[in-house]
Structure formats: structure tokens, C-alpha cells
Length: 84
Image (cartoon, rainbow, N blue to C red; front, side, top):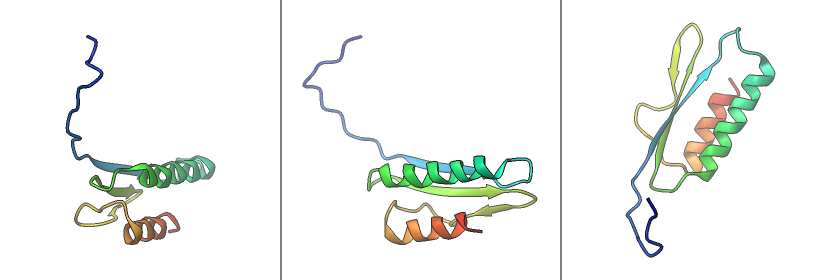
């Protein structure tokens, strides 16, 4: 299939859920890389998209009870979760 070059389709809003394994089985360097990749992905998201982060080890921690927009306060919440 070859799409028409002038074809304009509406963007579909996306919701991203990031999962972070914080158990002892993951190496600290790898965990640091995962956190950096997630934060980078947040900065690349469209303003209409939403996200949430679930971190798990012996328990599951959810960043927010509702989806978050990729904007200022949400970044601060995500960074706080990353530093735990």
C-alpha cells in the first residue's frame, strides 16, 4: 500500500503506561537507564496525550490515580517517583 501524499488523518490521542521494575533483581545502572528513557519519552509526548507510571517491587505504586498530561507538574511528580 502506498498512501497518498496529501492524505491528512486526525491524530488519535494516546495514553501511555510506563512500568518500572524496582526489585533487587534489576541492576541499578539498568534502572537508571529505564528512568531516563521514560523521562525522555515524557518530553516527546504530544500535549493531548496522557500517561501514568507504575513502579513495582514487593508492592505496586501508581504515580497518579488519573491519567496525567505531559506538562510541568506531571514532570515534577514523575521525577519525585524516580528519586525514591
